Structures are given as C-alpha cells and as structure tokens.
Length: 387
Image (cartoon, rainbow, N blue to C red; front, side, top):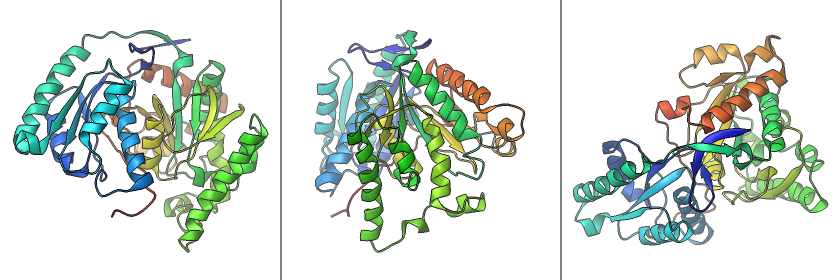
C-alpha cells in the first residue's frame, strides 16, 4: 500500500515540499509574512514567543521552531530574527542545519540588514531560489508504513462519539496495520476514559503513564485554584449535546481505534514508534496541532461536530464532520462527511475506509480545504509567565 511522496537524503519522507519562512521571535512575524506573501510556493508561521522566556518555556519554543524547520514536509527554511531576542535566530538556523545538513537554510537578521524593507528583500531573494530548487523534486511511491498520522477532534458534539470519531478510529487501525504510526492527543479530553486507554497499554509502565499524565494535567488546574471542568466541555460542546468531560472523553478516545498503546510521550516529542502513541497535549486545538506536527506528524485528521477552520502551516489537516447538516453548512472548510453513519446510510467501517483513502490521497498531494484557503495556525504550549 503506497502513497506518492518525497524521499529526503536522510531517508525520511515528506508529503509536502514547503519552503518555510520561520520567525524566531514575535518581532519578526511581519517580515516573515511579507516574505512569504511575495513568493508563491512558500508558507510561514506567526507566533507570540521568542523573547523574555525562561527555562522550560524557552527550551520548548526553540524545540518546536527547530522541529518545524527539520520536518520532512519542509524542503528549505528562511529563518528570520530581529537580532536582540532571547531565542536567537542564529541558533535556530544552526540547529536545523545540524539536524538536516542537506536542507537549504538561510538566515535573515532584520537589524543587520538595516530594517524590515531590506530584510524582506533579502528573504524574498533566498526564498525564490529555494522554491525553484524544490520544484525540481518529483514524488515517488512510498510505503504507507512511513506515515505518521495525528488525530484531533475540535468543536465536538453529541454525534462525535457515534460517527466521525469511531470512523477515524477505524482508519487509524488500518494505518497501524499497514505499519504506520498514529498519535492520540488532547489529554484533557481523555479525563474519565484513561482507564480504557490504559487497558490497551503494551506493558505496566505505559499503563502507569496513562494515569500519571492525567493526574498531572488535572493538578495544573487545581494548582491555579480553578475547576478545569469550567473549560471542558466548552460552551459549544454543551450546546452540541455533551454534558460532562467524561462523556466528551468517551467519544474522543474512539479516534484511537482499537490497537495497543505503545507509549505516552511529552508535548512535541518525536514520534519514533510504530503503532498508537499518546502525546500529552492540552485540548486547545492549535496548540495540540502544533505539538503533533512538531513531533513529526505528516498530516492530521480533525473531526468536528460544531465546525472548525484551522490548519497547520506545513502539515495538511483533513476535516471530517459528524453530521451531514454541518458538512453542508460549512462545506468551505470540511473535507469529508461522516453524517451518513448517523443517517443509517453507511457503516462506521465504510466511512473509516473513506477516511483512510483520503489520508493516502492527501499524502500523495491532494490539497485539503484548509490548505486551499491558506490556514496556517500555529501556537506553542507554554508553562509559565513571560518575564
């Protein structure tokens, strides 16, 4: 079972061939965006990080930025810095080059260039050259076992655990059976169902991680003196028919299918194992999506009962509606409809196979609605305050 992708010199594979314009700091966002808007074939990220961060927050920001630059969906990178930030653009560029020596990396420092206009021009020149070189590469047949799939549900409703999530779980099983990897995330949306996931762990150590991960996430809320159930389920979830976080979680975990849980890993940690892996992320959609992509996910299937628009700058996001009514109402943003399960016109297995075929098609170059519309959402989870 194959898809058509790009084989990198180090043996990794990509399903896109992006030239990424990557700001190291919030102050460089506007220049990064200006470069990308002038060069077709590029993509860019915007974020609020990169300066006056300390400790684990600074380390995580640097890690996520480097991980996007080294992602196999990225052909080359233009790193843009202001020049005086905490997370130095020079270090980000050097780390990308060290991990991927074959990858073209160009550094633009706004202060050194003499301002934003000159920095933008320098970035445009470098990006134009990279796009030309990237266009010379051809897709080739690659075994589906190379794929890493992220799973996500946002704007869940009472149908999420009946239609779209079980169908995605079936597709997840198909990919794992083909030798690939699947990432389950959204730790806050596993609360109340952790015992079910733990029962599928490959050993006691992994099962224990399931419970300690949930406990740690709940402690973050109690340490703040708040009840996490004030934000989970969300108002939209409640309007969609969900009553408790446990009810939401029991529907959410269907995305993970039925195969054994291989490990529980940290936010944005590299996905190195085959099979099902749980990544500890918050439930916030864009922070979760960014973390999974930083971990190496080639693409994500995102189920929704209320509707969603977001997408990653470098990793395709396939949107699946829980009902046909939603699919018809937000067709600009949604790729597949799981509503026929609710209507009794298709089975979970049938829709799951459609999702799996869409995964292979998108991996082979088919554009998702989020890509067509240019969504490039990016947000990094943070632990503490800006100093």
